[in-house]
Amino acid sequence: MTAETTTGSAGVPGPASEPGTAYGTAAGPAGPPPTLLIDLATGLWRAQTLTAAIETGVFESLAAGAADAPGLAARLGIGERPAEILLTACTALGLLEQEDGRYRNGAVADHYLVPGRPDYFGGYVRMVAQYTAPGWLRATDAVRTDAPSKPVPDPDRNMFEEGNRPQAFWDGLYAFSTLTARRMAGALDLSGVHRILDVGGGAGATLIELCRRHPHLNGTVLDLPHVCELARKRIDSAGLSGRIGTAAADFFTDPLPSGHDAVLLSMIMHDWDETQNRRILAACLDALPSGGTVLISELLVADDKSGPVDAALMSMNMLVGTWGRNYTAAEYAGWLRDAGCVRVRTVRFDAPGANGVVIGEKA
Image (cartoon, rainbow, N blue to C red; front, side, top):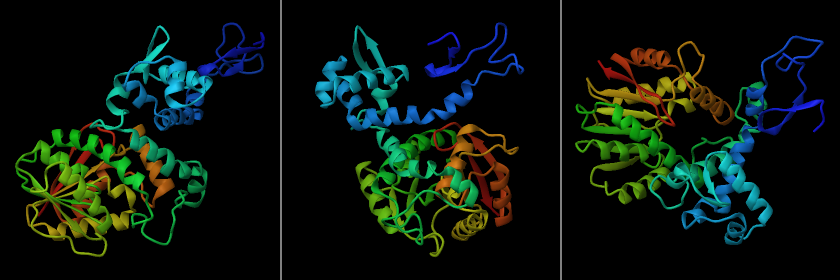
């Protein structure tokens, strides 16, 4: 490195600063450090390091015992050079710990990234890399065209129909939904709810966690037929087949089943535009008795549209992959009131897939 350069974040060379200035030059005023921009521009590096470690089996191997770089290389059948580079990167990212040249899983990796463990999250990471990343790499196209940039096998069919979303999507989303549902279950008072309809409930993660937390609760997962098959397997594995059923339906074209005193829409409405969301709410209200409850669980955008980051970026994810976006609590509250709900309120919590539930009661 010459005297004309300095080293910025992540070792990226930057222009030399004049004495007493911050990234300034004699020709212009000093500016703030570009660390934010470097971190944003290189975010893919972090994500792909994590993906490479999962796909090569780093965390699974280290769960069986600590190893140095040559030892791990031999276990994984890769070269010592990439093994050393990957181990160093994972340690720098806080995923691994190193002592005397030997590496072991850190607490987060040990809990979430070892296959077969209850909260295994590697499927979600791989789903993002394989399923959502192609659309993100064309995000500018989505912004310019106001149309999804993520490729699907058949763009003329519903994006959720069988074959238009891979098995990896449903497997990866299950862990994400499970962690979200646990936090939601702890935040909600469901003492007055006895039977809940989970509309667009996917493989059943949310309703499974709600029923585990609230022993008095029963319910139904409603989704497309091929998704209900996945849900039944998960429900059986959880030992909850006596309390949770499934209903195969398209919530845009089929009437929703009655006999429930609450309807849940968990991470569903961000997939659709306002017109379609109002249709969904109308169908939900039609299926509920007077006094029944509608619960909308989402990453809520701030009413002033200033963030938060997770909700804002999930909205970008909807831009590249769907015709929806993430909405504000005020927007959902307005739609609920227009649909005939009273006593509309929002319960806040903090989870990967949601930061609040907007609740309304059918008049």
